[in-house]
Image 1 (tube, one colour):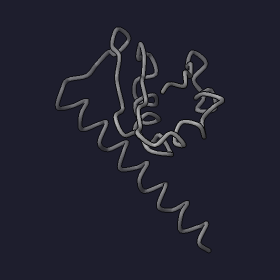
Image 2: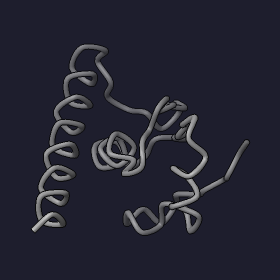
Image 3: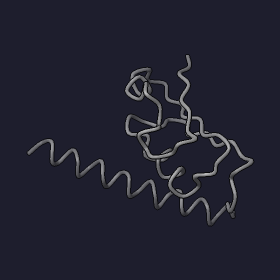
Length: 94
């Protein structure tokens, strides 16, 4: 039951991330990010905003996920190919 609650919470957080990215896109008039580098500072374990950005702007030139907790990105050592974006690459830093 705790796992279901966690899954539900993760889903809500992802939905909130999608709404946030859509709001940013409207506010800042994002149309085409194919020449832009986007940074998600404080990306968190689930990379929700990164996923939302890639869903709405799959052509983004580069997406950099940054978090001060080293274990966050270690979870994603295989990169973000699992998100369904063939051109995505992953680089571990710091």
